Length: 302
Image 1 (cartoon, rainbow, N blue to C red):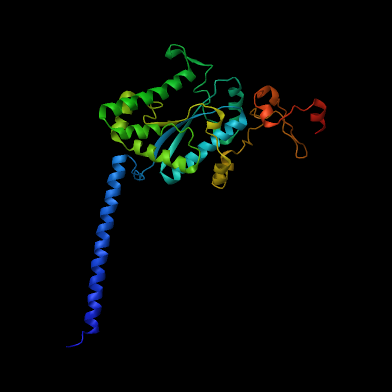
Image 2 (cartoon, rainbow, N blue to C red):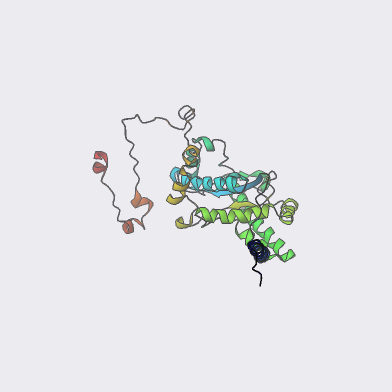
C-alpha cells in the first residue's frame, strides 16, 4: 500500500478544521438570534445606542436644606454623566421644591453654585399659584403632569396590548435606583421609549410631556421617606468624583458677595461652627442615635 503524502494529510486536517469553524459560526449565530428573540419577547433587549444625540428630561424632587439639595443634585450628575457618555442622551433638568418654607432659602443658596444659577427653582413652587390654571398651586400642577404621564402610558398599553410599555414606563420613576448599574438599567429602558414611534406620537397627541418644548417621556422621582430619597451615596460620589463632580458644584466666586450669596466670608484662620438643635429637629430619633444636647457654654468653648 502506498503511503499517504504529508501534503494530502495536511489538506485533510485543514478541510476538517474549516468545516468545524463553519459549523461553530452558524451555531453561534443561531444561538445569538435565539437570545435576541427571547429578549425581545421579554422586553429586555438593549436598544441600540443612537447615532445622533437624543434629548430627554429629568424632573428631580429635592428636599431639605443646602446640604440635602447638593446630595440630590450629585445623584443627578451621575445620571447625566452616564446618559451622555454611554447612551448619547442629553438630559434637561427640572426641579420640584419641597412643600416647605425652608425650600426657598435652600434654593437661593444652591443658585450660588455656577451650574444652577439659571435653574428655575420656582417652577413647581407649592406656595405660588397659576392664575391661568384656575389658581392651582404650581406644585400641584407639576404633580398632575406626573400623574397624566402615568395614565397616558397605561391607556396606551391597554389599547395596544403591549406589555412591554408597562415595563418601560415603570422605569421612568427612579426611586430606589441608587447604584450606577441601577442608573444604567432605567436609562436603557428610557432610551427605548425615546426611540419608540408609537410612544412619541402619543406624547405629541395627548400633550403629556413636561412642556411643549420637551414633548417626550420624562424621568422623575417622588418625595419619600428619608431612606428612599434619591441622594448620591458615598459609593456613587467616589465613582464620579474624578469625572467632574467637584467642578459641577463650583461656587460662583464672581458674584458671591455682591450677588447676595454671602454677606460675610470667613477668613483663612477662622472656623465656622454650625449649631443645630437635633433634639428639636429629630425628637423621635435622637435617643436611638445616642445624641445629646450641648450646653451653651460648652458650645462656646469648642
